[in-house]
Image (cartoon, rainbow, N blue to C red; front, side, top):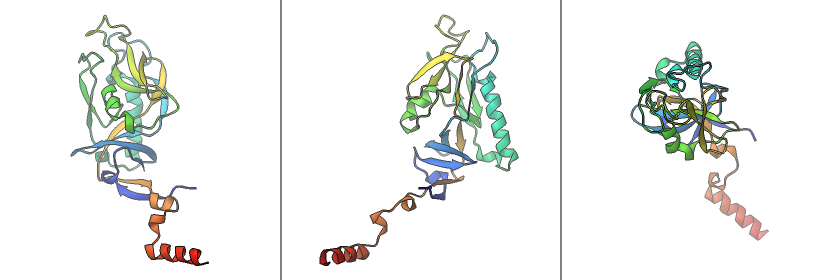
Length: 215
């Protein structure tokens, strides 16, 4: 059965709800006075976190090829007519597993979910059929050089568990964004997706029951 969609504002979508906007599907994670935090329902592409050798900042999201890719996707949306102010800037804390803050905090209009963010919202996030990158470095070369695998980045397995991996491995990119709560999005109209007795007037139900019992 094909889905029947209806338009609502994103602010009216519940946390954990799936919606469609900008030709993509997303899951709503949270909302505040600034907007609604959302995650792509599916992986958009697979690629290394970083390519080449960068001993100083190998797992720094700011210098990653992933951010170049995401910046291009954002530009494509705006070039097709989507107003830039629909994409609300949000902060991504790049502290590593032990809390080292070498990479600091950045602000983007599109990015990746952090390890702490995944820990907070994992119950709402649909599983996908390939591992996908998080923004959080396992360690950092200058602040935690004795950490094993300090060039690693955290990622999520297909079963929802998480681990860390070398930055030049190829995993999925599943963007996180903050949309305006006023954005018009499409959701499945559950009332029209299938038959429900709650849609039938009570008098009609009673008349049907009577006709069957008397017949």
